[in-house]
Amino acid sequence: MTSALDAAGELAIRSLIERAPLASSLAQAFKAKGYTLALVGGPVRDALLGRLGNDLDFTTNALPQETKKILNDWAENVWDTGIAFGTVAGKRGDTTVEVTTYRTEKYDAESRKPEVEYGTEILGDLSRRDFTVNAMALELTGAQPEFIDPFNGLADLSKKILRTPGLPADSFNDDPLRMMRTARFASQLGFEISPDVLTSMCNLVQRITIISAERIRDEFTKIVMSPNPRTGITILVDTGLAELVIPEIPKLRLEVDEHHHHKDVYEHSITVLEQAIMQEERLGGANLVIRLAALLHDIGKPKTRNFIEGGGVSFHHHEVVGARLVKKRLQELRFDGDTIEAVVLLTALHLRFHGYGDGEWSDSAVRRYVRDAGELLIHLHVLTRADCTTRNKAKATRLSEVYDSLEARIDVLMEQEELSKIRPDLDGAQVMQILDIKPSRDVGAAMHFLLELRLDQGPLGVEKTTEELLAWWKNRTTK
Image (cartoon, rainbow, N blue to C red; front, top):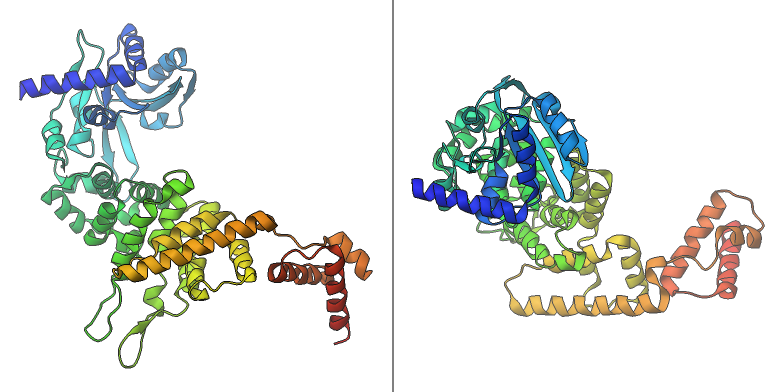
């Protein structure tokens, strides 16, 4: 094991030097003041995996105020929002660092916030870490860099398994959010979960209720944005965590009896998510809005399921019900307003394509499709295509070809009419002048009429639009 540790230390040091050369200068700054400094946690793990980034975590025996003084001299920017918990952060160039004083912590059973006590040695600090693969350190201020691995994190890293440094029950009781972090790391790293860890998660699932919505949102987002969200979501569902943090997902596991066959809505939703991810290059890369919409677009189905006499099942208006459920859940998880609004709209529109038959779209229907999607048109393209999970290859090919034709129609009309900037051919001032009216609800009604006219018939020009407006006004005022 000693040779393995030596080799691991050399690999971590080499990765650190290549990818984060500023770490050495920071270590020298602490050493010059008589303090220790060690790279710790996720960055050590990532250095060993060859994926070290520019966000580095360190631990030190310097107290927070001393750390702040050192960072003020070393970094270009320093912030101390976490100083009450022993953490001071700084940024120099492209490298962001967080330096935390050795800690031992005591947790209130009803709160995730610990009572922080500063430790005197690194082993105590590592013992409080969430997983063994995150409880390794690289001491940088000795005569030579030293790789520290008291809980066999290196062996677990090579086995790709998540274990806790101590008893899982103690770890999860102290910080229940670690249960969601387990699912997140399984998704991000492709690791298995130790059986004792999984058992403790199932036993202690109710403890997650003491965690704030914001922290749950952040971990859930990391799962959804991971390379393999299926893994993490399935862990949340199987352990019972999802029932407490986002219950609409496990509810998608609808019973399918022998008389009422329909798709497994849960499996369908995960597949749609995976197929949407495969198209994300259209959106410029990993995209939270499309991933949430793909995962949640059918959450209205459990509430709208209706068995049809003679066999079969329907989910009428599940997109409308789903949009309301999406809004409520994302609000409770404290997602930002723009994200909520976007996911709600995509959920509401995800069936629109299927309402127009086999591609027999009028120009008016195309204009309305573009108008309603607005800035989320490409998102809607991605979601609609991803929503095809049929195993019938002929049907899948036909749907794809029909959607190809719709996108082509949109492109043509975009070029001809600038669909993304659809406006009536007259503005409000012109309407008031033509109808000889003052600002009022009548102006709003007239503008609505003109917008519908524009959507139905395309651009008509000022003269023809004026004729249509006057005819509408005459008919309206003589009723």
